[in-house]
Image 1 (tube, rainbow, N blue to C red):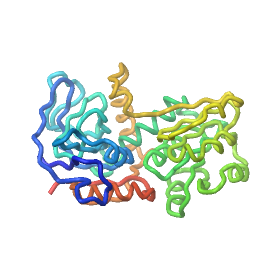
Image 2: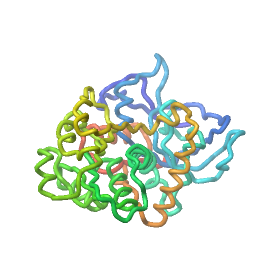
Image 3: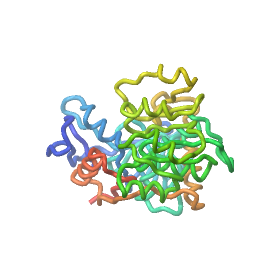
Image 4: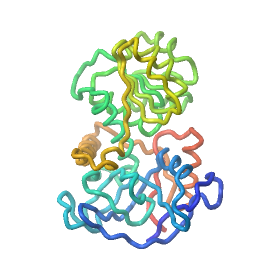
Length: 338
């Protein structure tokens, strides 16, 4: 089968950073689905792994987490899907990735593809939808379904993939006031289109911008990027007994800043369930089915922004380069194999 992989951790402009390769088609076992991959999207984690994790000498590492495709075959213990089913999922960081024509994935972290979406817009959704959902509802314990919630949610980095889903979930499924940050006109416009009540600029001081809005207390903060840079300001604007959730990788963080406000810090890592094979691993299957239902009902929308053509090394290098530039809005998707 065709795939895209690498043997060395290299800058994305290096000719060998990502390569078109041929691999053996895998066989499903246990609760595995063998999925014929029709479309993939690229996330910041893809670029981080490429830069940091080289495979053993002589071997290739295949990246990719998000995928939409068709079940080709199933393992003997599979209960949820059958060959021919159209699915979408975010995979596991413990297994070979989705940048391959055929891919193995545990059925417990797979959802049915939204019927109203083609493969490309569906592939934009899984990793960011899972991350945003778990951060909002599992980590920060926001209750969906309330028509009014007297709190403000501040989202740092609202125009990225996770922010794009988090704005929608918070605006459509909760009564929170949603404030996103964005530093460019196009990203500001994107956040407002997705439902943010207001947008402020994270390249400027946050406290005076929030004060000028005169909104309900900022009791919840989702820090999706630049946490190390923004943390003192986040603590300053956070209401007493508030909560901060984060997904990025700050090198240093001083949690003592939270003590005076009895505030709490929460991490969201969407691969935790699959990495540790938790008892509630199937929650991601159920979550993705809920997202598919919400998409099909028109409550949520895909966050696909750009399509970069077929799945090959050259197009994936373009996608990695754009993500590393920090200027991507929404999601980048690739579809089909030549």
